[in-house]
Image (tube, rainbow, N blue to C red; front, side, top):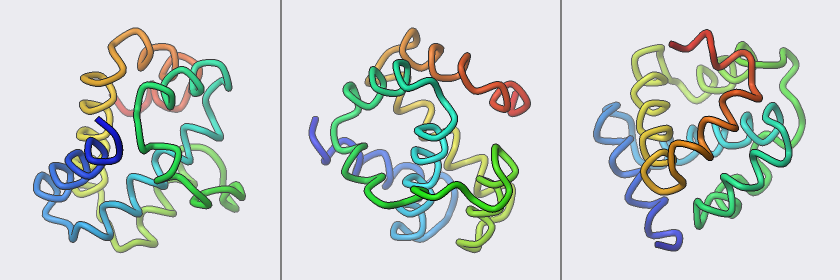
Length: 122
C-alpha cells in the first residue's frame, strides 16, 4: 500500500472532517506521534510496521512531549492546528478505521489497551 495508503486515509479524513488536506496531514501526524509516545513500544512497533508510510508521516511531529501530556496534550496540539472537537473526532475516527482495516483489529486493540486515556474516547 505504501504511502499512497496514508495519502488515501488523509484524503478520507479531510473529506470526513471538512478540514484542508495539509492540516489533516499534520493532525494525523500528531495523532500517530501521540500513540508513539503513549502506547507500549511493542504494540506501537507492530502497528507502525503494518501501516506503510506512517513512520515517515510522523517524522519529527510530536517528538517532544507537549507541555500537557496525554490526551489533553494531543487535543491542545490539534486545537493549535485550528481544529474543533468535531473535526478532531472525524479525523480520529478515520485514523482508527484505517488502522483497523490495514493492521487488523488485534494490532489496534494492543495499542489502545496500552494507552489508558484512549478508553475515555469511547
